[in-house]
Structures are given as structure tokens and as C-alpha cells.
Amino acid sequence: MKTEVKICGLKTEEAVDRAVALGAGYTGFIFFPKSPRNIEPDDAGRLAERIRGKAKIVAVTVDADNDDLDEIISALSPDMLQLHGNESPERVLNVKAVYGLPVIKALSIRDADDLKRIEPYIGIADRFLFDAKPPKGSDLPGGNGVSFDWKLLDTLDASVDYMLSGGLNAENIGEAMALTGTKAIDTSSGVESAPGVKDLGRMEEFFDAIARAEADMAEASAGRSK
Image (cartoon, rainbow, N blue to C red; front, side, top):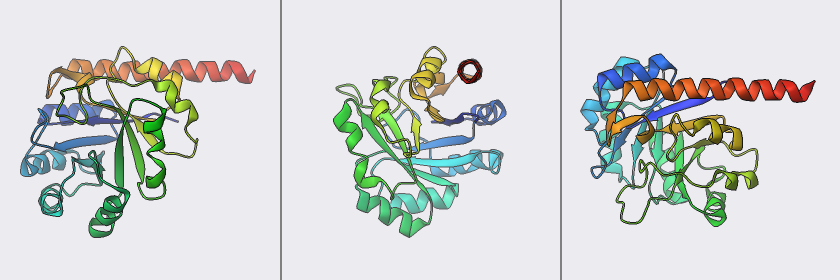
């Protein structure tokens, strides 16, 4: 099965077009003023129209209230919402009930106890996104370019649907895929030349690295089945 890829923090026509051309199945638009990837809802809506129907459009928010969500959803008409803050299971249920959209719940991971935090959300969130806990002093819940110990996911129930995130780039994505067996990945800072500036060359290198990792894993699987 081909790996699902989400390119997050998109802000320009060139980056949106290239992400989809390279094979991104998900495009993320971030609505969080503290982020260098923050975008205004109307601008995101214009970019989304370029690729609507070609990739899933994801609105990424951090503890947004319904007034903010109303504005974002009206302008963007996203396919999914990504809640990347401290939203409770009850809040996730409320958002789904009000807006009728599937929800990706992001959780920050540093140790095994952090992974246990998914339990109250199982059956509520439509998908999880596992990101690394931000370094001390960061105001950003994601997009910090840091990873967590991927081996922690060895204990995860195989039925949990998740996207792997956190510091993924062309240099480490092969190792991450081999260790976790993840079927879906998310990157933002890993394909940037500066915070919030997507680098089309790095984006291409990222997809090339994914393709190589897929080929290596397929070859290894074929070898085991002989």
C-alpha cells in the first residue's frame, strides 16, 4: 500500500501545486497566529481551490473556538479538521457534531505515558497524528523540527490509525518508515529552507526518499515470503 503523505503549513501557489504534483494526498493549512506558517482563511481558501478534489484539504487549528472555526470553515471548506492543541475528547465530539467533518487529533509524544493519552480519544477521533513534544521555550505545538523515539510505537495497537509527524525529512524518513511501518506521514519544517518557507527541491527529495523506502520495504517483505 502506498504511503499517504500530508504536506502541512502550505502558504503559496507554487508549494501547493508542487505538493500535489509530487503525490501528497493531504494538504495542511495552519491557522495559528504564533506559527510562521499561519495563513489567513481567505488566502487558504484561494489556494485550496487550486487543488480541490486532487488532495484532502486539512484545516489545522490549536484550541480554536467555534467563532474561529466558523470563519475558517466558511473560507476554506476543508475535508478534515486537525486539532493540534489541548482539545479534550468532549471538545472533539462537539466539533464533529457541530461541523460534520472528520477530525485528526494531534498528540505530542515524548515517552510511553504520552502514548497512553490516546485512549480516551479512541472511537472519537477519526485519526491520530503523533508529533514530538515541543522543545522547552517553543510556543509552537508542532513544526519544531524535532522527532520522538519512534520505537515507542511498538506498543501501539495495530488498529490505531495514525499519521507520523515530528521532524521528518528526506534524511530520516526511510528509517522512520522502516521502524514504525507507518502508512501515513506528515511533514512541514522538513521540507523548508526557513521557518514557513517551503523549498520545492526539498519537497521533491522527501518524496524520492519515501519512494526508496517503500521499494526497500517491499523487497524485504518479498525476501521474507520466499
